[in-house]
Image (tube, rainbow, N blue to C red; front, side, top):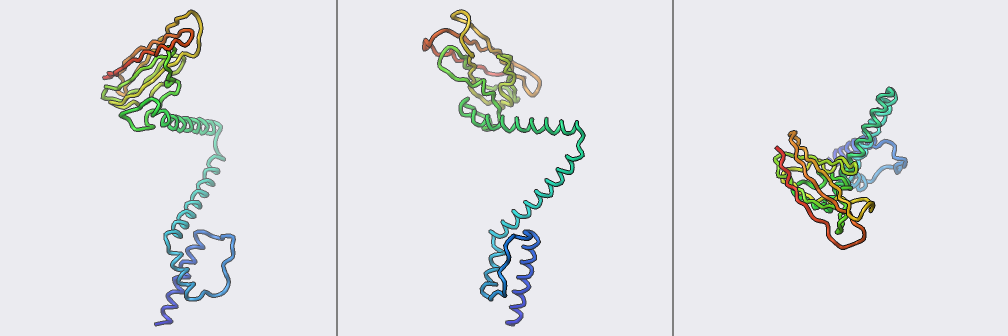
Amino acid sequence: MRYLSYAFRFLVWIGVTALLTGVVGCAGKSAPKGPMTPQVEEAFVALTLSPEERAVRDRAAEIERRKVLEEAEKRVKAVDTPAKRQARKELEKEEDRRTKLARDSAKLAKRVAMKGCAVGSVPVNPSAAQFTSFVDSGAVTIVNKSEVTVDITTTFRGMGDVVLGLCPNGSLNLSFKSPGWMGSQYIPEEVLLTATGHSGGSDSYSVRIIRSYGNSGTQATPYKWEIQVR
């Protein structure tokens, strides 16, 4: 029986060693020479079957898969036409913009007091979150009372997209700031906001900004817009 026990341990050792060699390959360090004592052999088998070593083998396998994919991608790109190269660049830029927008939106969610929608799920244009207490800005609280998700745009200062994907019952605060002082003492500016539902309907609202010289301390008048899109 004793000899059978040693034979079983030897077979386990051979199997585990083959597994490690197949997954990890050459590790760059030579294995200790000479036979293992029964105590070292038992500890070796226990260690190679431990959760930590399984995690190492899984990570090594993932690294090998990544290397294979990287090599395949290089070969695919090597035969790209000029149009396909251009398409790849455009798609990469779009993905970078989406990633940056989602990251910035998560940061802006607190500033604009986003409520009712998942944090980071509603991109907000930073230029529409210029909060100040003086009259050179127009602040508005927006509540989507519609049953559909809406996008909000404006032509003010060429801003374009203001809020994308405001969910039903979602709300937030926006503030549009005038870039500087010019002209006569009081210069009104209008920010025309348009909400377009994903169903195709639309609703509009106007926010007025009055710029004046000096810091009079007069607070900007807050507006409230309850979007109703069918």
